[in-house]
Length: 130
Image (cartoon, rainbow, N blue to C red; front, side, top):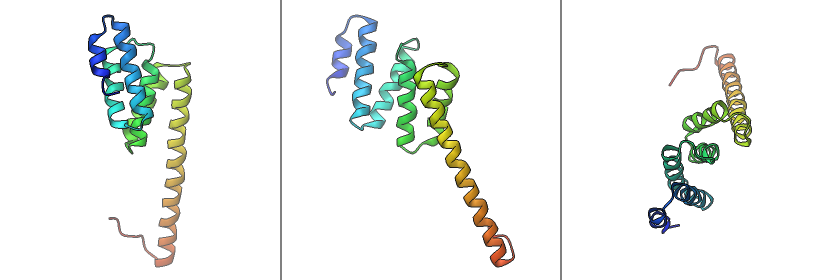
């Protein structure tokens, strides 16, 4: 993994460089080096916008940000995949991830509403906003 940048520089064809960059990013992702993987997947997306691996790279970017706790950024990647890569396996998975977010949000919101209601009924007034 450490030698990948040197290997990429030594390659002659654009396709070979793209493939090695993808494999480097994928290896980092599977090793749990999510920040580094995200940087390499982003490099792939920016350098090779017509790559056959584009939807997969964007999915990995979304998943990396999700695992790093950046929900907003991960949602952007998932929405991009759903919009620009219709009919792919990645689009189906991105839709599932977005649905998980909306389901979690709905549960979270209803829990908040319930706790507010309980607080009002137990004290007779609305709780203070922080």
